[in-house]
Image 1 (spheres, one colour):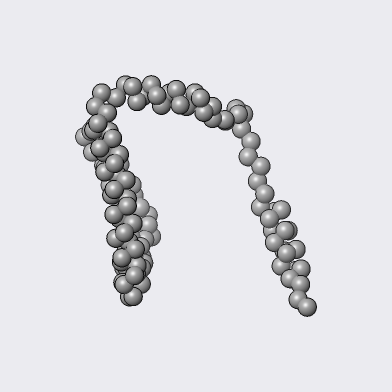
Image 2 (cartoon, rainbow, N blue to C red):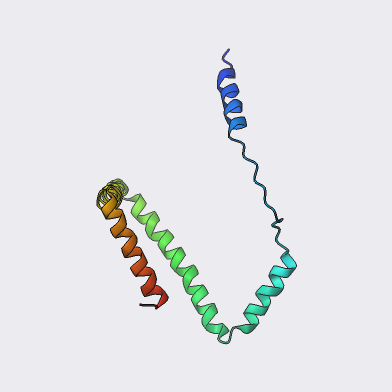
Length: 123
């Protein structure tokens, strides 16, 4: 008979070492009635409700179609592994190009700040 006692003991010891108690000076709780009234106010403030519903429906359809597409790609025998290799290769290139050296990290930070300015419209 085999009893994995050492593993359970090690697991309980490890989990007791990793327990973290989060505390905050202010209590964070969500009042559902307040949330719903706020949501209702925002919905009433929307002028073109049909456009919002159309975009929401379009987003749901897009997620559904992308799920079907990913399922179809996943069913092709070698394609998921090839895509994993492409992703791994791109990740390696990105790390080498932007994260390995201090000067390239600085360049990446500058490019990110430039993109932030473009999106914010402050450029």
